[in-house]
Length: 256
Image 1 (cartoon, rainbow, N blue to C red):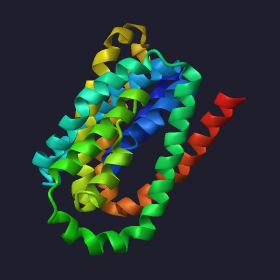
Image 2: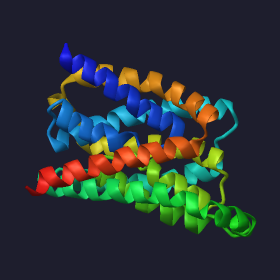
Image 3: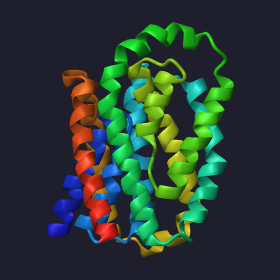
């Protein structure tokens, strides 16, 4: 019963992050699966990809209805990362658990820093948006998408915390469009990275994964409403602080 409650609670938080911020769900899902629910790092990465893929698709529908998804650029961005995500997903199964944990924790710390620093560059980003929008986007979309795919496949993260700032700063999306479009990218990359790991799904505890996923799906709808009510910046700061704490915990555990 305790595992079920933990799975439902963690799933709801993951869904809120994905629905409200357009990313970050797997940054919470992986440590929750490892430290609260007893998964190995490899199984946690696989389960997180599954959870994030399903939840992102749900959040994508909500944002698409609101007209916040730029499908053409989003699909190009996602397509560039698909083969890279699949290859990196296959490679991750051959890496030691401690290396994956340290890599994940370092990435979580970087994501938190970027989120906290984003507020200081908002005005500059807005000033340069028109100039960036006028530039060709195909090369930039392909390069950024491939890099995101590598991170997704290797560490089992959806990559929304990287996709959102990339869509805003590199491709001149508004924040609302970046959040909605990132869910399209996350869904595609997560499913591509999951394919090489499918053989490992037989070892997953579905009594935990299923309720975790269901709670995350429901949370994604509430996340969008929270973002509309409180503003993405407030949620982003709160998430960044939590992410820093998670990164510190994982680094201490991996290196001790």
